[in-house]
Length: 230
View 1 (tube, rainbow, N blue to C red):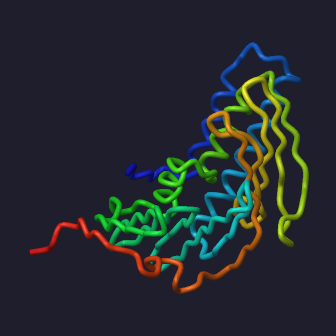
View 2 (cartoon, one colour; view 1 turned 45 degrees about the vertical axis):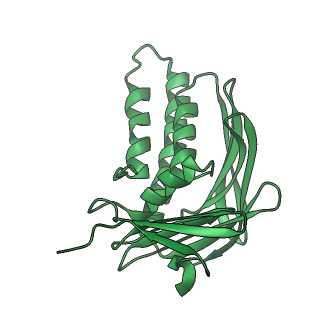
């Protein structure tokens, strides 16, 4: 699993640098570009700050299914539960659980590299499962900001009672809509992944985490692959 120590803000900072080195831009184009960079950097900064919070977020997925993301601090730990699987990262272990034919098996491995943010590690695994994550959304916004043919509009909205900023992106490569709450949680995403339509909408947000969020699923079989200590 990738160490993923880079923050979301770092991912977007390059937008300003890339947009300001094009010396042949007209002033109007430069102003438009910088406006796009400001949008991306603002949302990236929110999501980056959210990595330091304790919260849980429940999402409604396409087809009526649900997913749950949870993270807490001191000690830092994170989990993402989706239909058919769960990943939990703590300072003691990385645990992957998969459910097939009504049977859940969890594989326990060594924790990620020191100083890795558990949530970023969880997001990297979630993307491999075809799930929408904050880093993925920031990556797409960054790509759109660098596309002079993209049409990007920003608007204010409310997601489950929380103020949010929504961005609508229309470009030849793709079109999508993403919302980020003021707290930095991903509020919604509507677009495509690998050519397939995907939807994610925040249905519940809490500034606390249930104790069982990081537990193994009930009745799961366990395979411990950690190297025993001396």
